[in-house]
Image 1: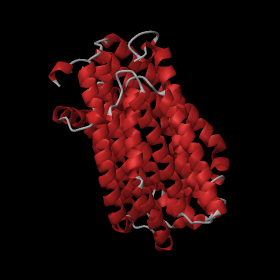
Image 2: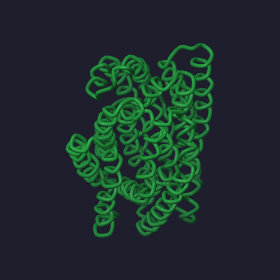
Image 3: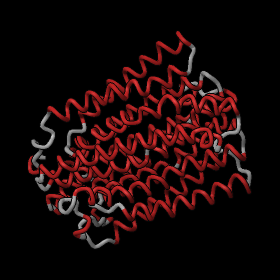
Image 4: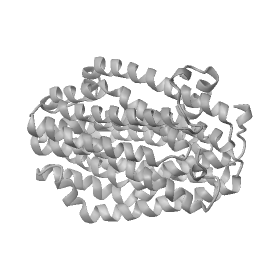
Length: 449
C-alpha cells in the first residue's frame, strides 16, 4: 500500500480532511440514487408515485444501514491490521469479508422479493399506493447483491486509506443511474418500478468496478478469487466488530420504519412531504457523515499502530468539525428549505408538511452530529457495542414508545417531528459522558483477537 494512504503519520487535520473529502463526494453521488428517483418520479409520474418511493425509504435504509454498519465494522478490523502492518491476517479478513457479502447478497434478494407484500402491509402502506410500492421495493430487493458487495468492497478500500477509487466508481454509477432514470421513466414510460431498476443496475456497476480494482491492485489489499472462503476465526472477529455497528444502524432504521407507519396514517401528502424532507436531510448531513467515516478509519489505524495520543487528538478535531458543520447546514436549510422541498413536489400541503419537519429538526443538528461522531470514534476503537446499546435505548425503545403513545392521543404529526431532537439529545449526553470518563483508547490487543 502506498505510504500516502496511511493515517498514522503527518498532520492530523490534513490526514482526516484529505480522507473525508473524497468520502463526502462519494456519499454525495450515492445519495443521488434515491433522490434522483424521487425527483424524476415526482415530476413525471405524480405525487402517488412519489409517495410510493418515499414510503419505502425507511425500509431501504433499514437494509442499507445494517450492511453498511456490518462492513464498516469489518473495515475497522482491516484498518487495525493495516495500521499494525500485519499482512497475513489482513488478507484473511479481506477475503472473508468478500465471501460473506456474496452469500448474504443472494439470500437477501430471495427473502426480500418473497416477503415484500407482508412487510408493506405491516407498515400500513396506504392502499392507493400499495401496488406501486410493491413493484418498486421488490425490484430494489432483487438487486441486493450489488448493494451489499459494493459496501463490502468500499469498506475494505477505505479501511486501508483509499477513499478516491470509491468516489470515481460512484460518479460513474450515479451518472448511469440518472441516464437510466430518464430513459426508463421519461422516454419509455415504464412506471415506478423502473426507478428501482435503474438504481440496481447502477449499484451492480459500482460493485463490479470496486471488485475489479481490488483484484488488480498490487498492494496488500489485493483480492484473489481463489482465496475466497470462510475463515472461522475472521468471521468471529468480523461479527465482533461489525455486528454491533450493523445492529446499531438497523435499530435506528427499524425504529424509523415504525415511525414511517405512523406518518403513513396521516395520508399521502404527509408521506410525500416528509419523504421530500428526508431526501434533503440525507444530502445535508453528508459532510458530517463523511467526517465520521474518516474518524473511524483514523482511530482504527492509529490504535492498531498504538499511537494513542494521536488517536485522541484526531477524535477531538473530527468532533469539533462535525458539530460546526452540522449547525452551519441547519442554518442553510432553514433559509432555503421552501425552495428545496418544492423541487420534489409542487403540492402546497406536502410542502407544508416538509417545512414543519425541517424547522423542528434543523436547529438541533449539532446533537445528531455529536451522537454520530462519538459513535464513529468508539467504533474505530473497537467499542461498537456502547453506541449500539445507547441507540437501542434512546433511538429505538424510547422513540417507538413515545410515538406509539402520543400519536393516538394527540393526532398530531408534530409528535413524530419532535421525537427526533428529543432522542438526539438523550444519546448525545450519554455518549459524551462515556467518552470523557471511560478509557476507550486502550484494552484491545490484536494478538488476542
